[in-house]
Length: 164
Image (tube, rainbow, N blue to C red; front, side):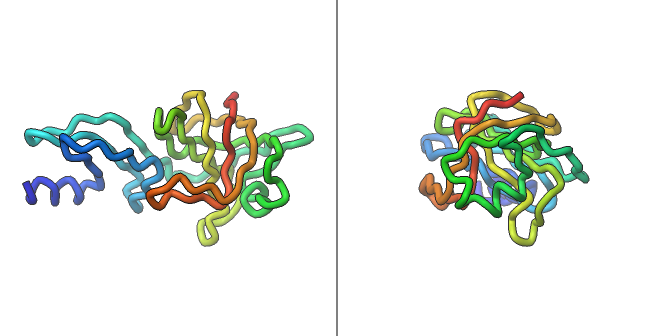
């Protein structure tokens, strides 16, 4: 079993052992491979339940239009002043984790911000579905200092969003 687990870790996959039921990790960044998979491991077989892929290409998405339109970097850097406000943001879906805690977890990038200060990637929770590579406009409420437990805390995110 240890050899199998080591192989799984080498291909940047994370697994849940059969018989245990911890919450999947909706925000696992696994380095430059850009891919992660979560599934149940049992009898030497992996069965994907939730699959998350990360888009790592060059991104340049025009800013949404409208009175409440913001860029990804603006929302992240001005989170405290935008808290509880409804905003519009247009970006490319770079990561998607479906149906976790009753919602879909979407990471958007528009080409603004920096990876050095984490201002280039915005988490959006929504009931809508999306696919990696989709360019969407999200309309939702800015929340700050959200802690979902198990180490998943976010300084800024958008919740209750609709995607167009």
